Length: 113
Length: 114
Image 1 (tube, helix red, strand yellow):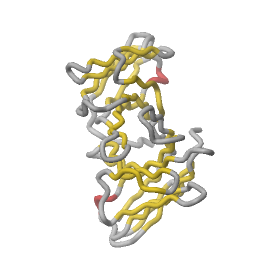
Image 2 (cartoon, helix red, strand yellow):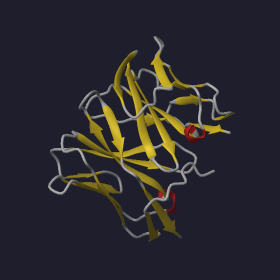
Image 3 (tube, rainbow over the protein chains, first blue to last red):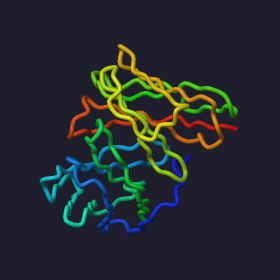
């Protein structure tokens, strides 16, 4: 069953198209920014991270872009597949007052076959 | 499979009751994190333990407490339960709690308070 019933921003894309998921973060002091994917009925799963001194990092079919000037993070998924349908969360690691990870609100990605 | 085990998968209880959620981290991971995921608030960080010691607290209610045992498993205790405590509770583990921190999440415990 569905693990989350949030009223999330939703992105609907056609299979094979590229997807771009955006996120605004709040803490300028965060050292790392991370994208997680959460499929229905499962816990979040690490996709890719980027250190704060970088502006781009590429993985397999995914690219993360970091714009510290406007505190914006994006995840690009190339050639989106039905298996990419999930909720995507950006997260920032906050080392102030002990170590914790702050998650964004999430974006639901629907991939149409 | 992330290697993080959470039990039970589902828990149904009544208001005012107390429950304990259990988490076994990945083998060798020293850090354990607890999160609450509810309908209207997304993933909320609750608490972080590293090798048995509390390292950080988030928006954790005083009715909630946690601990990490010498074998590194962790328990989250929720007491005087209210309807609003109904949520998914996730545990995650990582080798350490440093800046480059990739967390591995369990499948969660779904708590329903009736």
